[in-house]
Image (cartoon, rainbow, N blue to C red; front, side, top):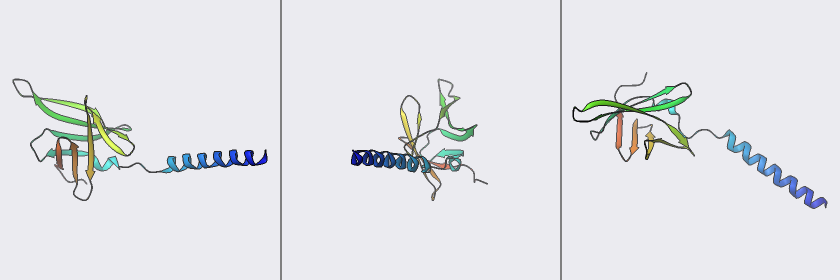
Length: 118
């Protein structure tokens, strides 16, 4: 009986330690570094990444219709298991290369920052 109690206690302690370690881990990407205006190197629509309250948003400045009017659309930037994406009806994954300061949207390609960060 004593061995079973010790085993249960050990299992509970290991489970609690795993939860604490998982809760202490840092987020995969510092989203503040993504904020700014971005221009596609492949001629795709420009994007703006910004923080609104606690949420980060991505606005895509696409032209549509016969008159090719600018119709910005805004999406919530979501982080799941360290991966960033926006949901436009389709999941578009986003990655950031800090060394090159390049934002990559899959499948829309690479984006470079329009202006330098302060």
